[in-house]
Image (cartoon, rainbow, N blue to C red; front, top):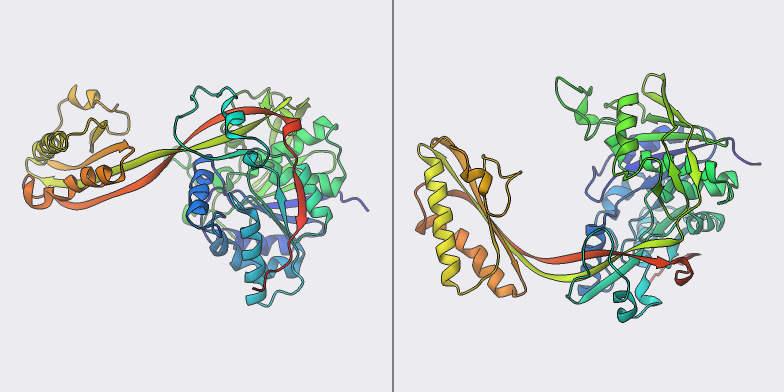
Amino acid sequence: MTATTVHIGCGAGFAGDRWDAAVPVVATLARRAGPRYLMYETLAERTLALAQQARIENPAAGYSPYLERILRPVLKTAKASGIRVVSNFGAANPMGGARKILQMAREDGIAGLKVAVVEGDDLTAVMTESDIRGHDAVEGLAMPDGKLVAANVYLGAQPIADALALGADVVVVGRCADPALALGPLLHEFGWSLDDLDRVAAGTMAGHLLECGAQVTGGYFADPGYKDVPDFGHVGFPIAEISADGTVVIGKADGTGGLVSHRTVKEQLLYEMHDPSAYLTPDVTLDISGVKVEEAGPDRVRITGARGKPRPPTLKATVSFEGGWLGEGEITYAGPNARRRAELAIEVLRSRVRDLGTNWPLRFDLIGTVATFDGDGGDLRAGRDWPDDGEYRVRMATQGGDKQMAQWIADEVLSLYCSGPAGGAGVRHRIAPQVTTASILVDRDRVSAGARLVEEDRT
């Protein structure tokens, strides 16, 4: 029997989201009737690049390092309640993530858990590096010269639906379009065809509203005195009710803070949407220009009117390259004449880095002025007068290909403790490997995605 309403909750909107956010979501879903799902969206382009780096260092790594912390608190309840989990926390190693989940299930006494992986997003398995580099970069960023680390294409919802059809309790995906995490369960439960453009568009819209977690329930919305959010420290994460006709109702977990209103929904609808009449996804071109948003009760908003246009002929892929090393350091000056001491620290750092014989680019920020809006040259800061007394934090950053040089430059901030202006404190300095990315468009026929169940590895 085909479902009439599917309930999908979100447990994370990015990799570093709150570890316990899904607990009240699962508790709420457990009290609902009908098909219920929990999705985690944990994979930004930068996050995937970092995961690729982690897998290079350790082939068993590469899935989300937060997987256990965010999933373990709810996995047993979800399984017992029939709530199925779909997430892209597979990152660069979906199989590794799936095996970790099976290990968690064994340790926690969760019997019969079925885990499936979706594969096919890794372009390096089907294309050579020269083939990948032969594609023109899009979105204004040229193809870097560094060593190719990875190339991952955004998959759509069908392989997720295929994984669910295998009976999976948990589906682990690598790179996919964020809304596909919700659309996949809807294709599976409602039997929608990808040619049913308006319903696929409605499912994509539901996924877009859910994908950023608390952003639709008051997170990244609150602005005291202008947009107040109740009990913001316990903001609840969203739950969508999607009907077979494509109607979407957004609510949130029971007994939590935050709010769902026409304003929170409208902000999230437009979030990262370059063209509201043609939002490109692997499954459909979504048109929300005629969408109707109406409050349907306390913390409940109904959204209707999504329209679908044919999907794009190509798929977007993110190509990652080694980007050298970032070196950075910070130190604080406070009290009388703090600004002038901070400016002197910057002069010292410039001189010391020149003495190292490098022409690496340098950026200096004086946090407490206009650091957020200033350019690398500090022209905005230089163009205004700032109080001498107060508190200011100096930040220096550089980037280049030599790890040792990055460390030496960062160490110059540390040396300010005893060799810099009076009263410097609170030094932090570090170096970190960098990954640069570019986007390309690839023909769909180059990509072959599939799903399979994973057997527990007891070795």
